[in-house]
Image 1 (tube, rainbow, N blue to C red):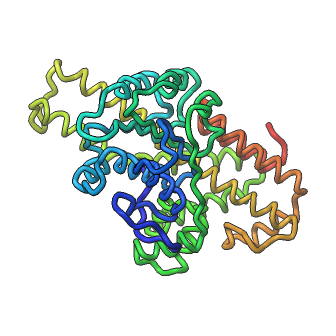
Image 2 (spheres, rainbow, N blue to C red):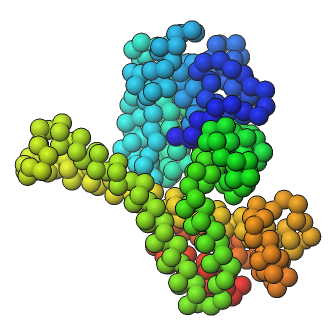
Image 3 (cartoon, helix red, strand yellow):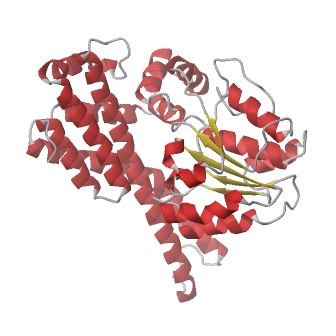
Length: 391
């Protein structure tokens, strides 16, 4: 879920359960009015905005206001905690949302509310549906029960099929300014303003990523090393070396993020079925352990691909800065700390070469979504950086 925020830099609507929604006053007003039956209520919503804009935080706040009676903070807190029986939420930890997951949501959507005013189905990663999975949702979105509300979240409308878009009301979130995010990070973490501003800028206003950069010097160092390494690529051998280092760093990062959780889940499962610590796993339990391990592998794959995608996002910002410099703009650079190196590239390259590189980065992101091997995809992209030509 997108990281919640404490206090925005702009005037906001302050009322539970919207307290953790930061910088989205217009969206809060729209959804609060709909939840109170004042205006615009519909059975299916699509909340769009870039990663880190607070899509899922807003979706769950909206769900709380729909399910709970006005003023029933206990029920609202239960929804926000994800434990209310009238809330069904899906955030896939795999590469895609499976048909099985979609069918489960559809089945739940036809249940009547058990305690609250509405039954709410939240799909946080609706952009991770392939076409056949999207088709599973169509009828449920078109003809839902009277007291069921669907809330889908995605980066943009274009990430969903037209048939899905035609059945939902779209709510677009605003992107906060770098300074707004920097002030928020200062308030949350206590870091100095320079670190907060740099982190907000490097994260391109992604609140969760900005907070991680601000509080993790190693993460800031890895980002800097990666960008400098890419700028120094001069041939195929260099491309292969840098691609390997990027994947290794992303793999280690993914393991660090998932290892502790994986072990906790395994220990919890063994305790639940009565297996003592260190004891042999009975044959009857092995299938459950195997299913858990398969789920953890899918989560690790997504975590790795998300990590590489963040690197590609950083590289897009790098060559976007080069384009700005090539056209005489230096007032809005994301990677100001590398301005000298970027100016050298901007002077040496034709703008068309820079655009070829940016196109190749975009193609690499799409290829990774199609399960192309990360090392091969990055090697191909970095050869383009080194030569200005696609392999």
